[in-house]
Length: 150
Ligand SMILES: [Ca+2]
Image (cartoon, rainbow, N blue to C red; front, side, top):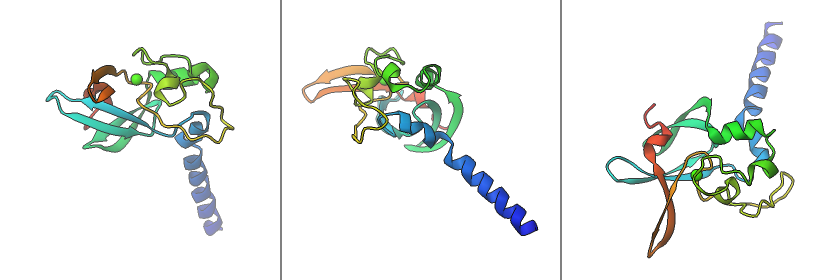
């Protein structure tokens, strides 16, 4: 009897893990976004962030944890019924580029059933400023935004 109870508990925990954050990703065109930022010493860092709608903790370029608090993109995702057609044209972080542009779907054509692989260019919940040079344009945010060493 105890063996069956143990197996039930293990399975219940596994199911909870499967249906956590990754389940929401099916409603977004990408599974992760890059975040290029500059710290107070003017050093640039690039992070790859998987929990797009939540605040994250980063330690030396490695994501070490996740806050459960939503960032502004995560709030918009929730308030708009996880509907990409509504989210795509919004500019959640108010940096002048739509969520679609930032997440690789500038024409808002992606749907959850499309088998298209897109590439995000920046974070839709963290504002970045355009910097143009001879090498092109890059979008740079502030590293303090990612709660380093939290
Ligand atoms: Ca942004």
